[in-house]
Length: 198
Image 1 (cartoon, one colour):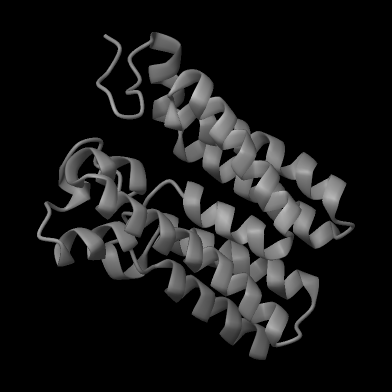
Image 2 (cartoon, rainbow, N blue to C red):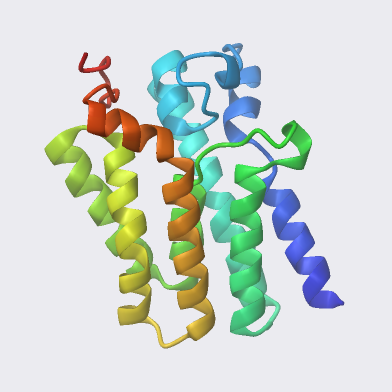
């Protein structure tokens, strides 16, 4: 029962949409109605600038990180910690407080990975940064980091529960980026700090 309470709490934490809250506090338009319509740091950067994007990114990462670290501090097993991380991630994707219209989960997923194993998180972040520097596509960077995350998890941890969670994060991230994948194929995807290529 205690594990169930922690998992529910992690979901509710993840359901706090940093992008929407930050935009409202800074007097910006609701990111769900502007730009790409995605309540995430990349879209907030487009409509509100760097300060709002940094706040959004930090808040989204912290949701995943805090959920996992809370499980560690409370001494629950790997399965419960993995479930808490996944719950926070699902809360970001489908937030109960915001009509279940959430973001794509990149920053929150990174926070979860940082919590389960900092080398896994650093490797995923390094992948994102490298691909972003080479291509300036946020979506492609996220997809590459997501696909490699299970391999990093298998390499740096020996936990089947963490590996299972990383695979689920990967699949959900790819699913949430399905429109971006089509845009990348059609060469119509927006670049970081720029407009669509066509």
